[in-house]
Image (cartoon, rainbow over all chains, first blue to last red):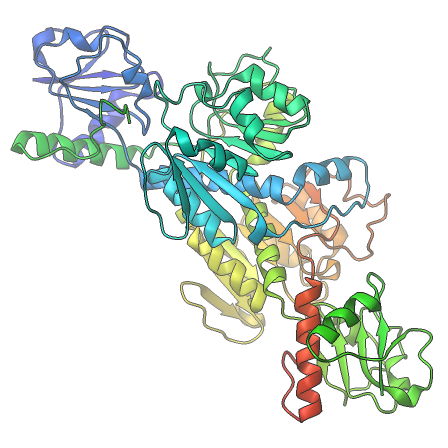
Length: 309
Length: 309
């Protein structure tokens, strides 16, 4: 049996080194040279071709090279009976939280104004907002969002979370479901998006929802570009309703050099660097699940196919 | 008896409102209209004139409007028998820590490079450094530095501290004294200065000490401008030894518009906004010490005149 490997950004050899180290070396077949389709037992993929995964009759587990699985569930012909496992990486989580904290502090401490002040050689104090009265809303409070929320609360911010289903997080007010999206947004001066991209969350940051945020609010998107309706975001920034947006993810990456985000005075663009997978952690997690699968034990970090995360 | 008030940035009326609220209303004499010198029992000051404080024969306590007291101890004729109290403000502490965290993350997450990338409309990933192997050194680990160190450690950084006298902080390696300054600096990729300004710390950040830092290191100074020898800092930045500096404090404030810091490509200038005193907290602390003084109880936050902090 063999493992089908397809990634747009890394190599099968690095992966197999770690799989071997953790006792689960595989015969790697790098897409598109997959050989006999019947041999493929596992797929380790980032952005598999639509219609490809259904071709392997003996496929047992699909491993996402990433915390997100939208790149797999976007395949309309995905074989729904095959479990999909994602990576839950504590390094990635910590990096994402750093990005969110940086973004929130950048706006909370009025750094865009100080950057302009320096350009003007002008000593202009802009005052300090009270952190304990500043509200951050974290959309999506799983592994990453939960960590982000907890760390922002430890800095003194008022932190709320929003998730599809009701959740409890110590010290964090959690809103849930469609019904509570409105009060959640209305309280979020700083909105941090770390949602999974699903049919239900695509385009969730649009003119209507962003307009529910307090005037002068800020968006930090480190989830997926497709959560945002680009034209709507520009509209609420240009109208003065929102004060700024820090964006790490885009509909199409790399972001096209002609895209209006690059030169927008209220937008910070970073090239999808909020978090990066640690190859060792990933290798270890995939290896562990392979060993579990071999022994008939339950897999870890399996995605709920109904929720798509 | 009365209180002499002198400040370059706030008003006596606001102060007296809080003193009254906390049961210690004073007859305020706003400098230079201080009336009979014998009446003055307390002084509430920011940057008193040199030689002024020795004029009041019945002066019992000097209150600094600030966490720092260098503006008082710089007076060569300061009456040494009068206790000096400073402000210890948890809001100020939290704000200072925010500034340090922002500065460290700015450099750690390579934001200067991403700002340039955006200006060039270029999708350039610069990689993510491992936080758990990144070393931050905090110079001065009192109230503020201790909080900063603790919060940076909670984000996963390796944090060391340096102080004049040996100290213990959980999870933080503390270096102390002149003898351990060298190994402390050698380990500090990110150096956060929050030292008090005293005869012993003036000019402590100079070509010799900054050259002890690892190549490519970063300085964040939120203490006093006079800790830094400006020309030396520019020299180690221009030589490429240091990667950048974020400065909130300067020898002369406001920073002169002709000063080379403003336009230096590796320097971020902010106009002394890392922290701001909360007037209510200050009023409460001064009121509490007045009441303690009246009852003959020991004062809080008294400065050690030998150490000058």
